[in-house]
Amino acid sequence: MSVLDDINAGVKEDMEARRRLVTLAELKERAAAAEPALDAWMALGGPLEQRDELKVIAEIKRRSPSKGDLAGIADPASLAVEYADGGASVISVLTEQRRFNGSLDDLDAVRAAVNIPLLRKDFMLDEYQIWEARAHGADLILLIVASLSDAQLQEFSALSRELGMNVLVETHTAEEVERAVAAEARIIGVNMRNLKTLDVDRSVFAGLAGSIPAGALIVAESGVRSAADVRDYAAQGANAILVGEALVSDATPRERIAEFMAVGTREIAARA
Ligand SMILES: O=C(O)c1ccccc1NCC(=O)[C@H](O)[C@H](O)COP(=O)(O)O
Image 1 (cartoon, helix red, strand yellow):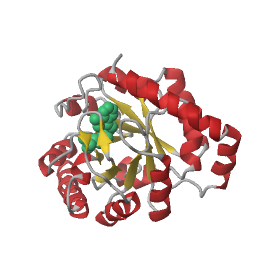
Image 2 (cartoon, rainbow, N blue to C red):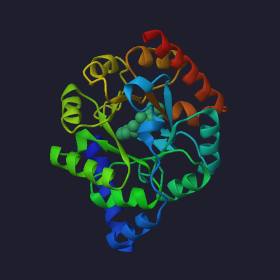
Image 3 (cartoon, helix red, strand yellow):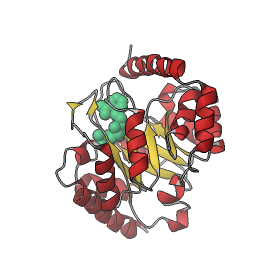
Image 4 (cartoon, helix red, strand yellow):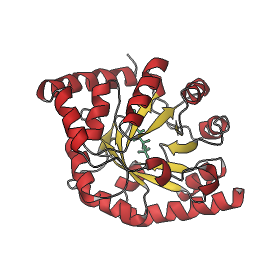
């Protein structure tokens, strides 16, 4: 079984346990009562002609399969406030429990603390989780192409749009980029972490980003550690970066975000 298959199996079990406690009908009621979703597409730069800055998606990440424990994060809400103060455009909240030690409680706490778009970062395998995301205040969800059929990509994207949310469609290979483009994804992530070995290979970004149509927003994901990494991704076409480990293990994440934005934005101005 691959790492992704293993994670997905646990995610399904946990979701079925939640479904026994909260029915889909209840989730739909909660989603209807939630504040309307914020516009993550515009927050990440929107249409081509308006993209003049590198945007940061800052992640609340306690642990990971590749690195183990990263940070305790007793108070995800105050970390989210720091991220927002530093200039993050979107906050990513990992809600997967078994491998990342996240939860929907984290999403609730962060939602109550900041007024910028939130990404529910999880392994989305069922429409139930999409309703759950909206019911807990998410504005953006992640769909990992490697985990889904083309039909699921289409259905889950359509449901997210119906609920007012945007979708970050995550790819790792040229074939997955083709599938994301065929599904008319507007926000496409290129994740440099190989899901079989968990190694990060930053050199995959340029090739994959080059095959994404100009209209789509491109997010460089995983292994963003330094200003030099940010400069490279911005020069190679990234509109945004998604950063977890480098922020949760930094004593001054606010300054780090501001630094990454400044470096990336300079590079975007240079490539214009
Ligand atoms: O982070 C992992 O080890 C991991 C393993 C298997 C599947 C997904 C994984 N991470 C999810 C992510 O996409 C990252 O949290 C995100 O891109 C941020 O990465 P980083 O900045 O390297 O923490």
